[in-house]
Image (cartoon, rainbow, N blue to C red):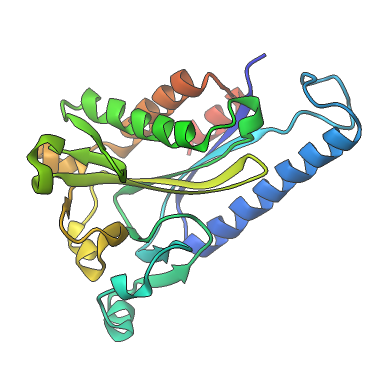
Length: 252
C-alpha cells in the first residue's frame, strides 16, 4: 500500500503559526510511531489496528509574508540589514531549528513543508534532500529552464556550468527527528529578488539568486507550478495524496 500524504494548500500565511503547526504535526507522527513500536505493530499496514493506525504524513504548500529565518548552524552576521531596516520593510526574523543558514521567504515564493515519516519510504536524509531538489529541477524543466546541483552546496541552481555565475532558484533546509521531517524548500517563482540583498543567502556570498519568472521573462502562474511540483513529488516518493484534501484546496 502506498503511504498516505495529506496535502494542505494554505495560501499566504504568517511564518510563525505555520512553523508551530509543523512542530505539532511532527510530534503527532512521532507519538504514533512510538505507540505502534511499544504495541509491537511496526511494519503493519493501515487498518491493522483501529487504535494505532500507521502515521499519516503531510505536505504543506504556503506563501509567507516577508520573513528571514536562520538555521541552527547559521551565522546571524549573514543578516546584513539592520533591525531598523528590517522593521521599516516589514520583514520578520526568526532563528529556527532547521539545518542550513539564513534564507528569505516572501510573496511570490512557493514554500513546501513535507512532514514525512521516512520509515515509510527510506532511512536516508541525503536521498530525501535529493528527491526534493529533483522535483524542483523537473518543474524548472517544464518551463524550459535547465536547473541542477552544485557539488557541496544544497539547493537548486541555474547555469550550473557557469561556476560563480550560477544562481540559486530554490533553497532547502530540513529537520529530521526519529526519521520524521519538517521544514523543506523555498522555490522562487515571482519573488522580488531585491529582498535577498538583506542577507548573505544561505551563507553563500559569491553566487546570486534568481526566480522562475526572471529566467522565463514572464510572470509565473503559481497554481500551475503547484500542480506540477506536486505531481513530480508524487512520482518520486510514490505516495498517495488524499483526494478529499485535494478537492478542498482546489476550491479555494
